[in-house]
Image (cartoon, rainbow, N blue to C red; front, side, top):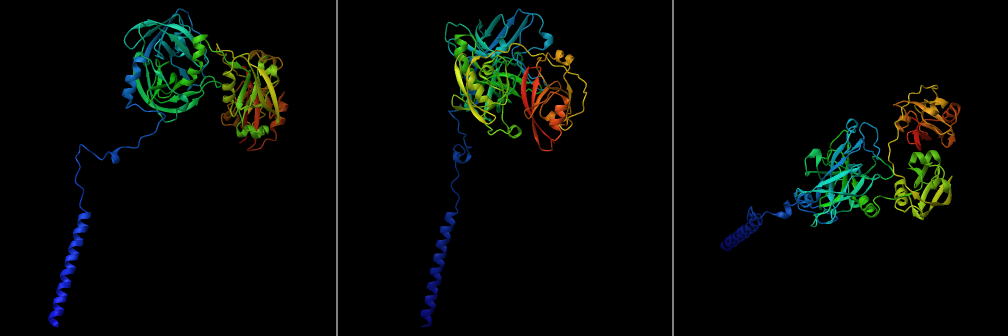
Length: 498
C-alpha cells in the first residue's frame, strides 16, 4: 500500500514537470524575436510620413517644378525715350509700405529709362503675362527667352488698377508655356516657388510659403494680394508664383520696403478674369457706382445703431456719379445687388466691377433702418493715372478742446480752405494735432483731416465739437465722419474712448 502511494506521487511529479516544461516552451516561443529584415527592404509603412492631401496630384519636388516651368519664364527689357514715366498706382507713403519691383528711385527718373522685369508665356502662340508697371510708358519691349533668343514684343493691353499687362512675341514654332492654376483654392501655409530675374540674375528660383491671402496694398477696392516669404527682389516683377503642382497661382508684383522676405503677388484668377478684355480691347472696362465704402465692425454698428453688421456702408458719394444720380447717401447700408447678398464691401465692389458700364443694377439698401430698393445705371470705372499731392499741414491749434479723443481741432479759415483747396460748401473743423497715445491716433485720424460729423451730428464749429464730445465716457464708441483733402474722399472712423 505504501509502495503504491509512493509510485502515485512519483508519477504525479513527473507529469507536473512535463506540463511545466511544455508551457515554458510555448511562452518562450511567443517571445522569440522576428527574423531581422534586410536593410534594402525597410518597413515603409512605419517609416513613411503621412502625406498631405491636395486638390490635385503634386509633383515629386520643387526641382521638378523648376525644370517644368523655367522654359516658360522670360526676361523683359522695357526701354522708354520719355524723360519721365507716369506712375499709375499709388503706394502707401508709410516707411514700411510695399514697393513696386520695377520702380526706380526718384533721382533716376530723369532722362531715357531702361528697366527689366520678368514675365511668363501662357500659351504656345506667345502671349506673355507680366506687370503693368514693367512695361508702363515703354517705347520698345524686348523679350529674352530661356533658349537665349531675343524677340521684339508687342503690347496687347494692360490694366493699371490690378497691375497686369499682356504682351506677345511671334515665333515660327510653338513656345513652351505655363499652366494657370486656381488661386481661389490657395491656403495659407502652402509651399510656393518663385522664378524670375532678381537683380539681373536670370531664372533664379526661390521657395517659401503663402503667408497671407487678400492683402490690401495700393487700392483697397480691388487689391487681393497673395503674401509670401519666398525670397524675391527687384527684377522678379511680373514673374510667376507657382504651387507644388507646377501651376501658376500668382504674378509677383511688390515687396516690402523693409524686408526682402515679404513679397506680394497678384492672384492669377484676377488676371484670368480680365484676359479676354485685354486681348480684345487692350484695356479693362469695369462697372462703377461712385461711392466710398467700408465694412461694418461691432464698434461702428454700436455707434451708429445699425440693425445689421452685414453689408457695405456708404462713406462718401462722388458728385455726378451714378450713385449720386440714384440718390445714394452717406450712411446707407448696401446689403444686396439684384438680390445677391453682400456681406463685405469687397463683395459689392467685385459684383459691380464685373459688370459692364451702361448696364443697370438694383441695390437693396437700409437707410435709417428702413429697407429700400435703389436702381442705378453703372458708369465706367475711372483709371487712376496720377498720384494725389502730398498734404503738408502745420496748422497751430487754437483750441485744446477734445482731449477725450486725443486730438485738437481748429476752425476752417479762408487761408486754410485755399491751402487745401477745400470745397466751398464744406463745413467742419480741421484736426490740427493728434496725440500719439490717444484713441484718435489708434483710429488712424491724421492732422489735416476735416471733421464733419460725430455720430451723424454735424460739426460746424469748435462749439459743436465741444458739445458732442463733452459727455463721452470711457468705453463709449464715437463714429467720426471725416473729409480727407489728399483724396479727396470722405471716410468713417470709429474712436473708442479710453
